[in-house]
Length: 391
Image 1 (tube, one colour):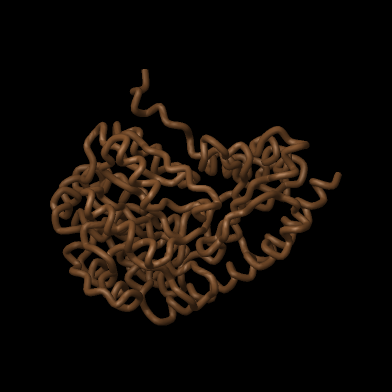
Image 2 (cartoon, rainbow, N blue to C red):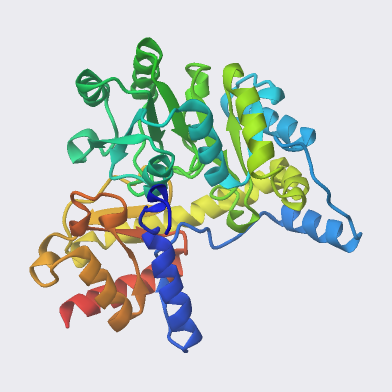
């Protein structure tokens, strides 16, 4: 029998992605808007570095559990470049994607039974990893009135019921794309520091923000050094399958994360670490910014099509590459977002993610579209969705 702690729901996005693969293998033309995967992939210099390493017959052994030192130094330099921060490379931990980073952080920072707050709607893996580790997830229902982000008032109310030990914050957020302002983040950091609550800041979508060339996002580490920052090469750099992420850790957690990392994974993928060193040159940044400009074009197509889509309230997509909306009038015909998404995929060949993954309370009304596939795919998807709804 499986353990009780393993009784977490599957990630709906991956289920839909499997359906897309099956349909495409059968010859169906499917537009996949279900997964947050940049269409352009890794920067050219990263791909070229990987090819050279392979051609040279490089034999990759284990690295340090926290990653190769040159990559940790390069990440520290990245924080100087983007945020003007002085980061000690010894407090940078390279991880097996941000997913590995979350697991290490939750294990190092929380005990079984600890109460950890997070916004609903939110990324389901937070909840599922915490649940599997025996933590108590405290949902903060964050609707349009608070721009889908937690507030000090919501935290204080949950803390008054029973003390919290942690808060997971994402800005830009998945699935909504919304961001907290610098002042709002400062207030949350201060409240957490004052109350002894560990803030885990998911900054994986930093750099994927709108308008392009504007603010890339405020790091929690700009405002306090007791927060843990989790990030990744997957989104801005488009390196999803390379499975490389990182943590910025307060000094008190470095030893614990090092010990856990060595036992759980030995080290992050070595070839990806060496290739990722090329992510920080000027050409790579320029390529990534051009990709973000392509996301912005796709985003504008979606926003302009809102009257034609005839859905309900949508989240303001400040960053990331998601459009999250209530289906509104469409629910008069389809009983739930799950039924709508299934019919849309089957009849129109457009894959979107029903909101139940992100919000157990209200997700039966919502869907998430990823516009990371680019403007041509979004333009075609809009036409298919409108035709599907009008049939």
